Image 1 (tube, rainbow, N blue to C red):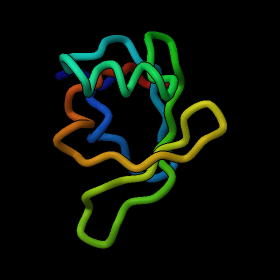
Image 2 (tube, rainbow, N blue to C red):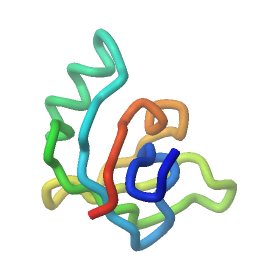
Image 3 (tube, helix red, strand yellow):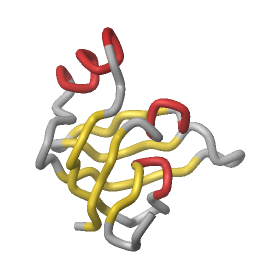
Image 4 (cartoon, helix red, strand yellow):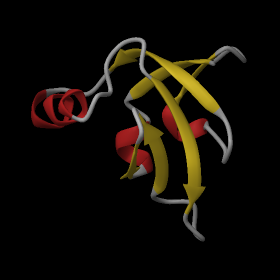
Length: 79
């Protein structure tokens, strides 16, 4: 994977990316879209838990926590 294309779980605290694709299906995809994770959305990693999973992300002025397994299904480009 190049430096400019990555998945959400690869962001470190303080880094941001712009959503380019959702790889998830079904209910998870719908839930992510409902909270504002759609193409073009900028997401910033704000907190990593002590063991690295889950992480908290800033999405449209709201902080959400996602497990790495779910975050791997969101493709980004560096913002």
